[in-house]
Length: 110
Image (tube, rainbow, N blue to C red; front, side, top):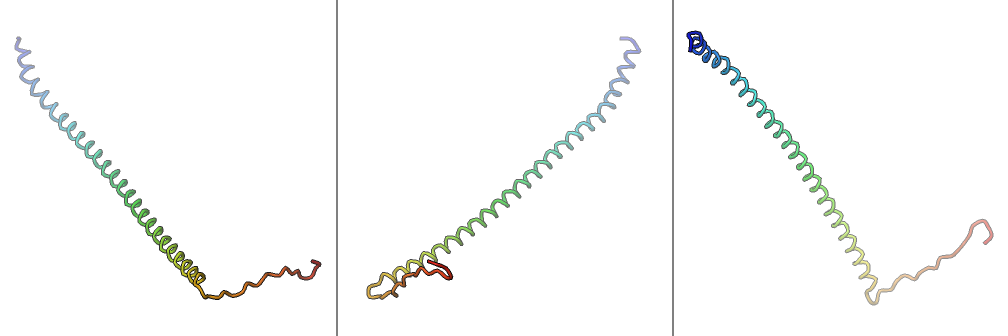
């Protein structure tokens, strides 16, 4: 090894280290920022999905309320019909005589 090679070795290795350290710092900072962006994107997607689930839960709740209202309304109507039918089926209850409908025509032959 000649004196020029020794000088290059003595000054070259630290020079490479001095140049390599900032590039390594830049690279690690870049990777960290990219990972942060990925995580932020995943959080936003998760929040969007959560909002959609909340909207679906609200719709299901509204549908259940509507179905229950229809069910209660149907039960009340059925109870009224059963009550009227029971009144008609009671023995001794006289019904009003049925009036036959007359076929009449006004102002013409028939």
